[in-house]
Image (cartoon, rainbow, N blue to C red):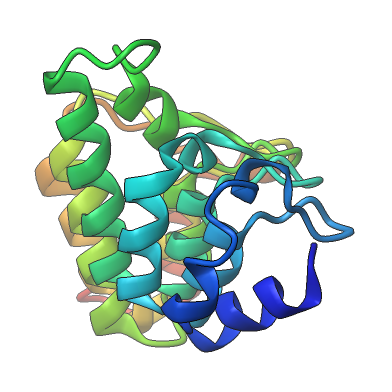
Length: 206
């Protein structure tokens, strides 16, 4: 990726972005992150919105780990950026833009090379800033309540991951149980989310 473009995404400098709008779809880091990945990681909402307007295809572009910008935003707990991505994808679907039918569901359900969906990432990291991660979990489950969020490559579900976080995961577990119509509770080694909760020795949580 052009160094000045990378810095602009890292710093949220939209003036520099506007000098490169005609080449965004070909600009990648060594890990195949595009500018939307980078701006999402660093939490630059206005930059993300500008990129979505000029090159929305970047929203569906995975990096070397199979992560879309949505994965990146979920991992970092960037709720406002996630809202912007979801709103933009919905708009393109409603406007019947070529190739965007069903795109929102595709993006929300996409898995990386580890088999993680965006919700796996949010559940795994919810111990860092519970309030922010609770918001991103609500965003996803409200948009796609019918998805069962299956096991990743090491047999973890988002519900299991949240239960493993103990008290920090209580609100996430509660949200998942209330909003998802079809949940898989399994974990590695034949354990379930209830096993994980019990091991945390929290009566309220269990």
